Image 1 (tube, rainbow, N blue to C red):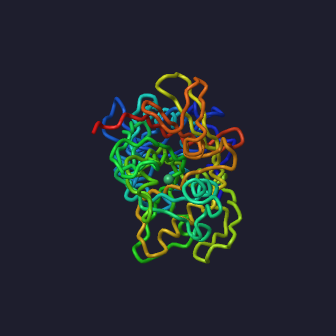
Image 2 (cartoon, helix red, strand yellow; image 1 turned 90 degrees about the horizontal axis):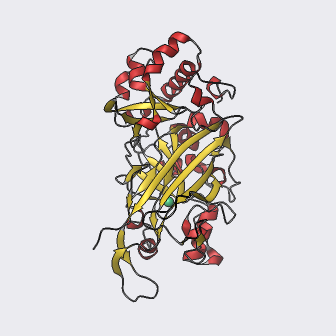
Image 3 (cartoon, rainbow, N blue to C red; image 1 turned 45 degrees about the vertical axis):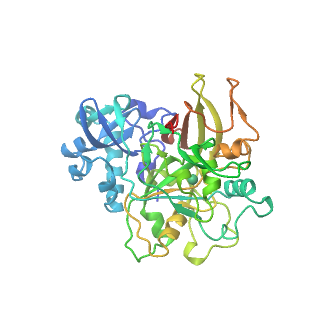
Length: 424
Ligand code: MN
């Protein structure tokens, strides 16, 4: 439901928050965890323009009626575990405090601001479990065409089940963390025996991650509407993938080491409430999903997404893909409902990768696997360099935002640079 915090006319006394191109206007107010030169203890903060409001200090000062200890934490899980009404009342109070042009309020809050350029962002959530889905019909069709059979690219279950696998929570890292090229077992098509070595097909997957705020007990499945309400917010997510390891290992139990080495997320969790004005219907689902997956409200989000590359040899930044989250076949709410449908307990801090987000055009694909058609049609960058997959020294950056009227709800970025593999 829309409320006063969504008003497009709302402005902040933090001047940088009123720029049309900032990711963090007063309508956003995403949650993250940071340290700063002045304070090496992690605190929970909210981004506003190019600043961060230190919520621990704000609560300690008495301006925010939430237990301050919830914000002297290395992650936002304790806050996410509170009732949804607390998420909402905290957002409303922050919106009021940061928009209220009252000199006394400003004078109290200004000393609690930390410049983002002077802060170090930490992994915002303690990731209890990481599950990755496969919910873009375009992506699933492309991969099925390449890896199996163009005539039967979608597996028979795909239109009935939000397909997923249990990934590794232990290697989810915050934006800016370098990623080591993984070693693995490889069997090129021309080889008769597998060998062990560095992946030759290191890839990205452009995804959004849904963060579970409210848990459900073991044995108590969620409806789609309940699942929707239990999602605290969203991050950008790069599900790094080693395609040559994947293609050899994935049958019959799905990806394993090919995706276990690193997953990069953005440091700011944009709340579901901030995204409310950008909720849209997804594609028509035909055949009609089974009743437990039926959704009777718009559950997709209109988020413009892009992937940028920087190589070691060039100072240029080049956008290699632009797409949108809104076309995903299965919504995050359906994925969470399905995940709980067996009685699986979902916990505060669980992370659900949407699956690679690919559009219908050649420049809207969410992986290099698709952009170069498994290396057959390399990308030529402005510098003249060619790329089939990610090379050592490359930096890949995901960005995303919802475009409002005169403002945007941004997700910041999810950045990772590739280091050479360990020598054997
Ligand atoms: Mn993935």
